[in-house]
Image (cartoon, rainbow, N blue to C red):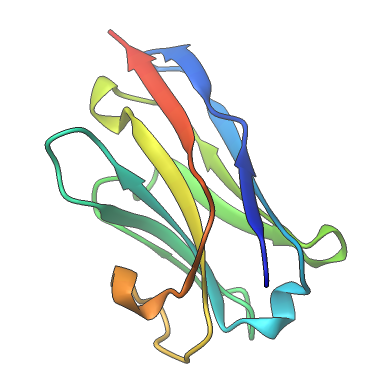
Length: 125
């Protein structure tokens, strides 16, 4: 059973930066894509970034485009989410998820079968 473990969350001031890591227990190339989702209290889960294993294509939600960058290190089986210019509305539990179907660039949670436990990001104003 594959395991995904997120790390790097924490408390940061508005305008600050954080880098989240998603360590995968298997080769990244066993999956079509890895995505980051977030869930804030009272809000629906939102997909924010996705990277495809075939060609490293990157996809972003409009809410984070230009501020967040997703990347991968296949040698370390790790996917990163670099977050800049953080805003209080970015506060949420961030999850990484692995996709075993093509569905390129998908932000539909149902396309992702494997999930991590999440890491909390809190942005203070």
